[in-house]
Image (cartoon, rainbow over all chains, first blue to last red; front, side, top):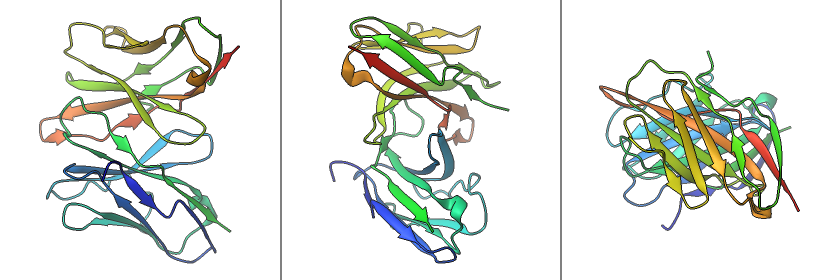
Length: 115
Length: 117
């Protein structure tokens, strides 16, 4: 597609429920990243995928968070047993060349609210 | 320890004037990249400018320029001739390059710029 697509754009869920957030990167982009942005804060790195390599999960805040990327394209971020502190905007980005000067292209984000 | 420090939570600038947004970084890696992003109230993240640690000249992109002072580990963003549409959050970010590959971008906490008519 023309840009990075994320769905849903907004999600309200009850505490304790599981949620899945989807990211469709730009076609041909080999690197895909997930970040979390809490209200008024900077971006917190969660996980990234590069080609067929094992993902870098070093930013995942707990084992309730997991992500996968199927076929080197679409990625799903799953949060199990959601807590109120999980409320944030979850941003996905993709890039053409991890080692280069290319900036990331970000999606519009999924605003998650846990009530 | 913070890898990216943006000390100005908020800045005001008069329309048509220039403004400098500060960013300092911390790394022991000799090879790294520095980025600036703009986030308007709509929430999208817009890539503005990039500076590589080995680049000989300061990066420029239209009205944006990066004042790169390697010895001071600073990478300040300069916006010339500010416009009302420049009002947004601005994030400085760094990527460290390791022998095994790159690390993801690490972002600062951002500076909110308000342009006054």
